[in-house]
Amino acid sequence: MDHNSFVNSLTFKNVNESDVERAFQLELEGFPPEEAFTIERYRYIQSVAPDLFLGAYSSDSSSTSFSKLLLIGTIMSTLADAPKFTKESMSSHNPFGKTVCIHTVCVDKQYRGRGIALCMLKEYIKRLKNETQNKDADGKYERVALICHEYLIPLYQKAGFTSMGESEIIYGNEKWFDLVLEL
Image 1: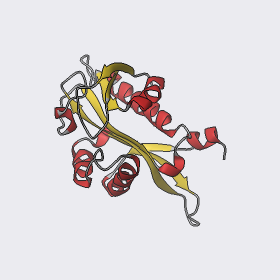
Image 2: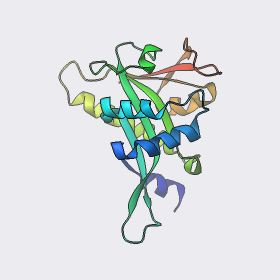
Image 3: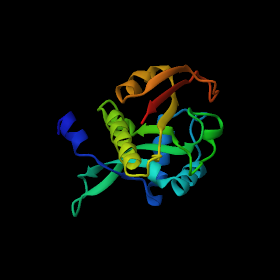
Image 4: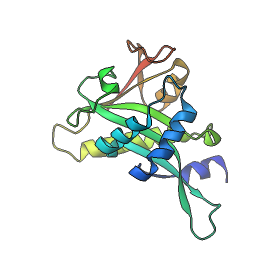
């Protein structure tokens, strides 16, 4: 299957409780230990913000009787009041917040380099915009915010984010940059 056919064959759906362990495995593969969330944090976010926890699933062709979906990528977020990602938003969820704070974008290491992260981000943003348009005049969400390492800024810019410069947040051992996308 070629690159575009594979990406187009992905199924996107919210990560349910039974897939949290697999999502956490992707986190451990994708982040150094000092940056990775805990399994408890994953379970918490899935329980309080399940609509903001998107999975990219691929058909597992190794199954003979039926096609099973394998979780190969995730985007996990919470809501906050602040207009950008903050230290507080890293550890809390405000169900009435207007800023979607993306905590992780993870892709299984054997599927990286195929455009899956960008495809997930575009699908995620599309869903957020649709959700916002289907709500009352105030809208549901106003923006999406995240922090990332400098080398990832071009990926997020391709998805529509604007870099706001170096973040005030210190997390792990490297510099982080604030990115925002207005909905």
